[in-house]
Length: 248
Image (cartoon, rainbow, N blue to C red; front, top):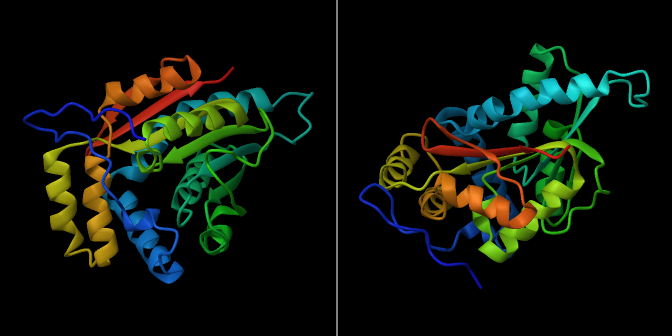
């Protein structure tokens, strides 16, 4: 069961559940992987990657400072898990950012199926298959946890479960990137999908993803309801929104 639909306005459609092809467990893995490549291109060109990098940068610096202590048994290497990693583009981008900041990192990607995890393994450094609602990691076992454009795939009760799991395994912080619901964004995704030669599955899912997206206050309310913390919400370019919070 999903939660109540989000509010509508002149600029934003009401939030609806919709149905994306990538949510179908019977979807041909080859088609799913092709669509995930389209999503990674969209992230790079249309603001998804830069939104996560902008949100995570101050937390990387803070977490790295905490890891560079004599008591640190991990050699100062920062562990980062990207939940719902898809093609693994976010871990690649985070490693590049960390390298520019002179921060050593170890990235792990998680996605729901073995074919997707296997395809993302090289990009991530290590990728595993698992359920975002029940992450296969111990409490406080990862320095930084990211989750980009995954939350909207879940009805609100399950989205709360995902947020609690992200919070549970994080040692320092959690960063969530999402689409900001907008009529303009929905039309833009549809129009740009043609010159970008997106697969028809990506074209359909892109529009549905936008109308499943969040206003900033909706995303903040989800995090508060899940873990009792008010996150830092930032509206990013190209109708993106991020929620970030410190765990300790």
